[in-house]
Length: 154
Image 1 (spheres, rainbow, N blue to C red):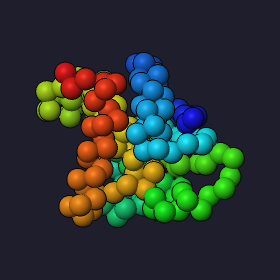
Image 2 (spheres, one colour):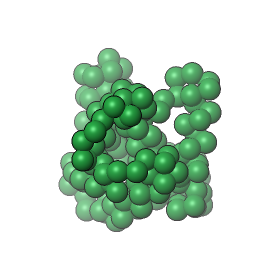
Image 3 (cartoon, rainbow, N blue to C red):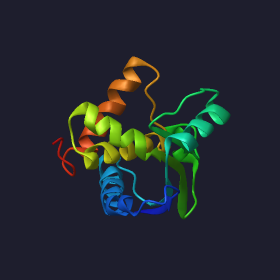
Image 4 (spheres, helix red, strand yellow):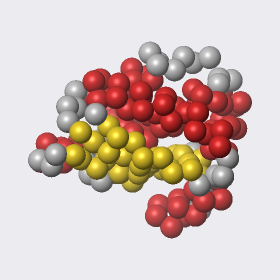
């Protein structure tokens, strides 16, 4: 089971409607990834200005982005060493303004885009990455395997 803590820094109430989707995606991810146990994760919804600051301060990239994850563990292997009753996965910051723009750019629903960003961030918190072609292939296949049954691409 994954317990999600939601923090909405946008002051816009519309984003609450996606919290149930995030929880379903997180639960399905545990099945797909074969990760039994109890986990917690924080999901922070922000706007472009705030994620730009985070990206600049923590990644030294001076521009906004769509999602940033801060994983509690650096790799998948670290999870094998954790023996706690509940594992903290980390934090996912989602830029809602980027989600709105990208949904339009990619021609799919806002629900699909914001759920995709959550899934992408969640996989990073589980230690997946896409810096190398073989890693990217695995991570992107998992994104679709987790998300497609729950949130259609329309």
